[in-house]
Image: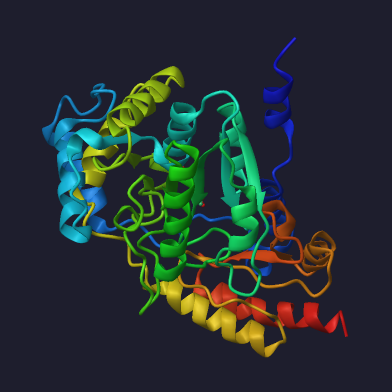
Length: 392
Ligand code: PLP
């Protein structure tokens, strides 16, 4: 006998992974230049040169570099992260409230496991990163999904207010967003904060706002990504260097429990306890040092904005409805038929690998991941045109 839940998770097909694997096989058949894989969110720009240089230097100079660190992370690394957040956002952050993790996924798992008491619920806004459901349910909580507001992908506040109850332990946001590329405006965040403050008072317990921010630095000119804890006091930040430094395989991120947050000492302790119970031990030691020494820089991210501009204008010209992205590296246009799975299957026949929106809680859409070479986008456009023509 094994856990049915775990067996299910281990064998369930992930549409994204399946498409990605299909792409590899198909590339072997017809040549990689003839397959247009927009399925996965692997950064296409290399990590800054300083990352490799720092790695080599640390490997040469620090014989202790592969050792365990404190469970919450090496003190010098946490100090550098805190100093960077204070410089960049005026965060007022102290190292003792940073808990280093193996990426945003681990950060989220530590937070959900640390916060959840029997009967708790977390509210998530569609379109959303599908792993949230796995993480929340894995912590023993219930996920409530708010349908998308498809004109702007900001928040449907009426539906949100209806979902809130005394069972609400937290609300999860992800801005810039995977899969829509939307950045929540300051007005959206302020309205959200107002509701959460009022409802926390009404229910007599804090409702935490969990801000999942792996795309924080991938934002286009003129778009503001506000520092969420300045807008809502009881915010917990989950961060990752997977995208900003192009290091998804190296697994480094953190949880920040700001010192102003309600019951913050206990929340931080519970996050650490969750990390322990999940067997995380400590975040990867070498990359704690590298990312903390490089945390004020990013990969050369401007190509993502150039890709977005080229792609959005070409798709719109063909007749697609695309909400303007503000950041990240995803577009989320409406599909040309209501059945997004059928639409993506039709695209696949043209060797365009794009992901149905229903898996992200937004049927009738498709996710196009444009962290690819600009030339791949350029060469894919006739295929998109053929896809449109097939619906005429
Ligand atoms: N949250 C979102 C919205 C993501 O898109 C991803 C990865 O793509 C993650 C979390 C997990 O990121 P990490 O690699 O840091 O675990």
